[in-house]
Image 1 (cartoon, rainbow, N blue to C red):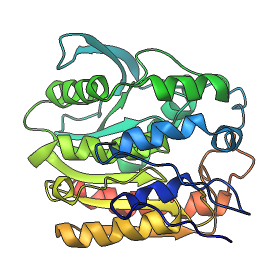
Image 2: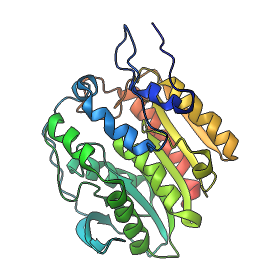
Image 3: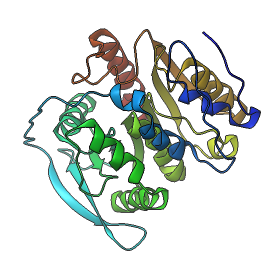
Image 4: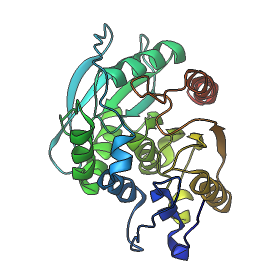
Length: 284
């Protein structure tokens, strides 16, 4: 496989290598954030085509309810909330994939709710009510996310759960990168972050502000969040003096989504087991 040299400061642009026969380098400015980098992937046809249109998925939660809360920019945000049976300060903020806050994410959240026990769960909606039923719309919605608005939604959620909350985060794909950003924004309230094949933060100084540990579930066949990107993340976390529990599977990007043809049931099972084992002691 031919390797193209990239700008040294922007090694993360290797995540934009889309072909198995050659790699295409995308030049990124030094001011491009990790979340903006990931959003740029929606411009690439191969990335879009790697996400098939999701199968119809219907789930009705008997636990959760839709809510709204005020955001840091003075607007309202949507969320889906599952309150613990007994009062607790443990909160898990869940951030959706590029399709949006759909029934699949709510189902995954309820499974986490059942398996973790003593925890409140809040599914955030970074798309402000838009949910994609096809990959083309998903790409448009992901690209349309403004970083300031997404941060305002997350900060609003942190304010909503309150200053005494112990906050863990989890997300997949688009939400995997934003899970890490949410943990950074949570400051001292952050106790744990789980990211599934999301774009890591490349600024070591920002990683230094993390309060909790990070668990990363990544696929070695991922052409975007590829092993080089993951290796740099591991190096950066060490440089920041932060703990990263890293699990890499012989699987592709999106391996934990059953609507994807490359869904890997064993990798999904293993990653979920690692996720529970990581979160439980940190959400006591």
